[in-house]
Image (tube, rainbow, N blue to C red; front, side, top):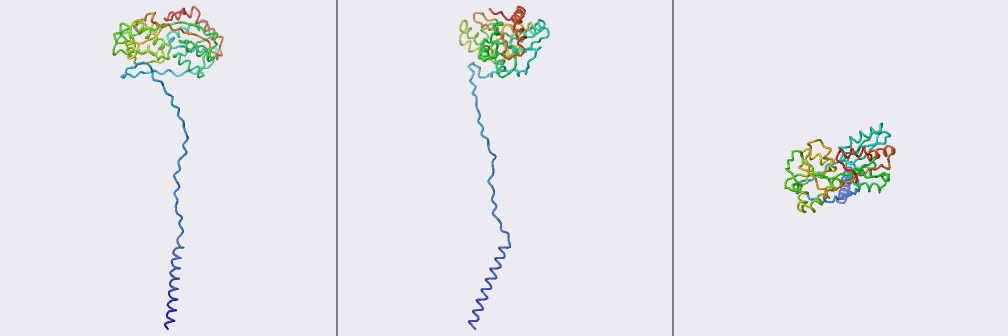
Length: 322
């Protein structure tokens, strides 16, 4: 009896364990197997490698007062000229602005059916425009330096490059003379506002030379430094200086004599600079290698060098080539 009971008890326990095992096995297999969720690493768009070239601009050597910011006026965009049999494209130093209208009219009268269009800008800007591929038939430069550079680079028909006219520097003042400037010495007075061209502009080159000559012959280096300290704007063309003076934005400006002569009466008063200390700027004219109208271009140069062209230049304050 005891033996049978033990066997029965053992079988009961085994069955109970089997039932429990089956129950847990059912519970485990009845639920879907869940795969671990893997979060993909965040993807970053590829970054392209970029190399930046930094061009350093050399600091200007001109002395500028600490409280004044020198302003450089930007030039007008280059016109998009195309070759034409009837229209001649003349790249012209900006200081000929006042006389260009008269020259154009007289040229058309001398050569009926032909028109001269003047692209007026600082010679340094005109040079860059040509080097960048702009079209021109004739080039009138206010700087032998830029002329020689273009000749060396092959842009001129070199045999056509000739001296055209000359110009001296003068100081102009607003007609009302708000700065009460009576002599060149007054340009160094504290508070005087002066405009001049950047030294890359031919008129600027001439002005720098004039001031150095005056400091050496009559004044001194302290005067020279004071004048530069009074400069409040450096312009990229000679007419830009004249405009600042005519508007009364400055008390004085360095320009060419021709600009003063060509201005309407009572626009400016002026202080002349002794010839011994002055700088005689020589202009040149030449036909461009790229011209598709070489015959008319040569006619225009001949007209400019003729007695008619030279007289017009003289009437507007330019001087003959000595």
